[in-house]
Image 1 (cartoon, rainbow, N blue to C red):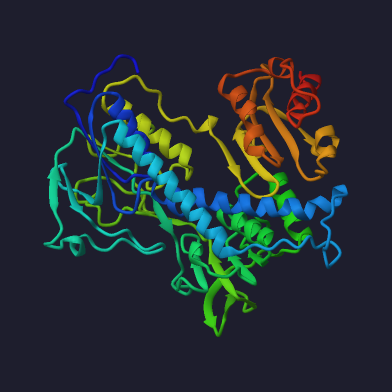
Image 2 (image 1 turned 90 degrees about the vertical axis):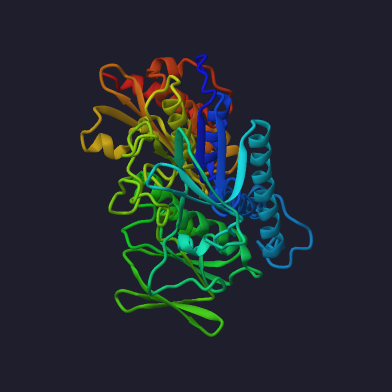
Length: 491
């Protein structure tokens, strides 16, 4: 990395999620002495309760859907008792056990990487002191899912070792936790956050998902695929209100076609237990009954009781750590990365912020964070993947570009796979015809977005993109075809 050496430099990372452990690895590679303080487990919530488990659950639901889809291509299971029923059942305890084993294995892998890099890992709670040092209370138990960390004073058990460390760089990467409602307090049994749902011992008969953003839509898709009746409560006009409107409409149409009840323009006011079920009261007085309720109403940064404000670190009104594009906070030598900053709630962004922070602080060459090249994915079925400029950017004049959208129904590979939902959308700047963004709605869109991301990052024009060979037949053929059509309508 540019021949820079950070020998004799010390780094303390508070939080062992993607922002924290990637920063630790980068600092160790530069030669720094690195300590990671993590209270819940390496990988943080991303690995242990959030991203890794939820995507594994979705993969399980998608695997089950193959059995249902089989009959549409002429494959039937002998002995099926009900027409259309292939006799497949999800055993949620087995499903969740596998997912938790997978998460634990991923956490161990991260620990092995850190150990091999010479990083010291301390299980405990870290706190920034006003003089810039870090106080660490070792052996603090993990925070129960969905709960706020205990006040720091509660961690001062005389039986626990406490030490104070000075550091040339302190990185705060403490993540976020699920937001809950005062009128909908999780009980871990029937009213749940997405971090508590892994303790379920039975598949919800009727799951009410409150919130139709990315988390809500993904869990609604997963549990519907596993066999639950699902009601999705959306306070907006459509699900996934922050995403490409065409893409969100496709997903909502698929949800409804598969039997999901989607309640648009319906805001939850309260959730209560009632016998062996739950009742969700909407603001207009309607009530929705189910067996379980899942709260997916956003997240709250884990920035309380870390000593940040006392040390002079500025927080936003929402409680996020205020950072610049190289992850600096308002205090020299203190940086922050990941969901606690509120920049972009993606593991890839957290990891990049962490790497940028240590490179900048330790004197390595580094480019500021650029969100215009970030690719992201929503793991519904079909998936929604995006990168760069959006349809809204074009429509509202922020980007002077043309767009073209191709439905997957025209793609030969999609026809072979019996796929009918989805599209490819590309945007190219007028004049230069440089590709500036794209949307893919398809199975495995998370893989198909990569060539568009490469084009955006390297400023390829539509001719360079479309002249690259694609396999026939393939889904990626639609990407090249979209670029060719942009050439045809170019100025």
